Length: 512
Ligand code: FAD
Ligand code: DLZ
Ligand code: SF4
Image (cartoon, rainbow, N blue to C red; front, side):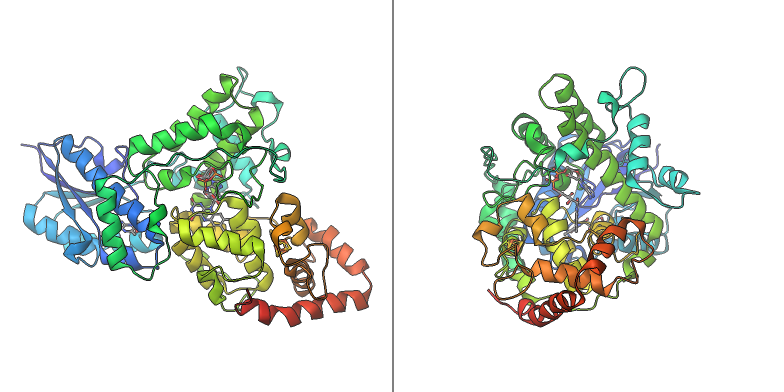
């Protein structure tokens, strides 16, 4: 007789490719999924994220039961505190001979799971997470001996390893690895933005919505707007819709900022990939196939594949390579408290209010809003790193620490001193004006740096450069900008810095 096993599946591991399900057999194995208080509240999660995860967990439970598995499902209403408690309780009931789980996506949860062996008297097997395209050992091998870990070189290796967008000689299709230069067009309403499909929530999701509304009355998230998919089939339909209606314009307007739409031509696949409803290789292969059929430009397919095959895998590698110290970095000594309006969107800066409003109401903002609008403001204003990271982890529906932390602390706030990015992603209002159409609706003028009505991003940008000029003096990529600043008349420089210092307190208080 084969030994019986308890297979524990976490809320962001809802995939049949979960290594805990390898060789799983309904006649022998018992599965546990648990909605628990600790995971639901370690940050004030956006209610969209709570509904997405709990509804997707319940749908996965039903899919597993359909395959004949016996599943213990602990609902939130059972008031179980932690995953450990759920595991121990279930083990007491079923007395399995071993316990299996896939390693989690967060250091915090990994530490908890490493203690499981002390809580039960049977072997606990924590399996490497195979749902990524680069193993952590593989990332370490790539990183070993390199002075700098640049995403571009990692990405090229990944293209070769996974045979994506290569010609018959193994060279990059089109002759270039990266078409980023073609992907930076500003948004001026050039095209009709396709309307996303309106997936009405099913009975399970409606039930979860009611529970989440009752249990989390103060969290962000307008659940009237909940339209995310909660099954593998639904997520695949979302991807198919993107491939048919948006992919062709994704590349060109990837960095665009639009008044008219929260999503523009973005895919939303992060939220599905990150909880196991889509698999990264299949997504990249589908997009490559669309290009090979001549239905989108190479720059669009390459730009999209680079995000998943390159950035997504790279940030995960950076996270695990540097945790737990990574979370403590504050290279630029940023300490200003997070403004209260990060939780309301109540600011007169149009680009910020739009990005924050949709982040709170939908749990979604696209990359340029996260990086060059909200993140840029946080960087320039010197907002406290830990508080900003917690905000990002709380508000986005796709936020899990392995991906949120390197992006926020490293890429947006440059708090890791350059592990993620060789220079800070700091920009003035001119960048935001060039990339989109918010400034036309704004009370401020992006052409002015000082005086009433001047765009705050401008003076804050130069204040940032001035404040950190010594820190960045040896950074070759900052030479030009520092030289431009030094070239300006000292009186003008002082006036800009003074204006920023004078404006900042009002800006940080709710000023809408
Ligand atoms: P698309 O624009 O359609 O891009 C396609 C896919 O590429 C994404 O779905 C995602 O899987 C991947 N991708 C693109 N850029 C990145 C990146 N920098 N890191 C990892 N994957 C990437 N992504 C998350 O998944 N969770 C987060 O919590 C998160 N926090 C972020 C915080 C900040 C400050 C910044 C600058 C970026 C963050 N990102 C995060 C990365 C990126 O912004 C989101 O993946 C993307 O906006 C999700 O929307 P989408 O699926 O429509 O992406
Ligand atoms: C994010 C999340 C939430 C909100 N709730 C649960 C839960 O109740 N049960 C569960 O198994 N997982 C949940 N998760 C996902 C875990 O927090 C996740 O596994 C870690 O964030 C590691 O990535
Ligand atoms: Fe943002 Fe400045 Fe443009 Fe207003 S003027 S939308 S604050 S960049």
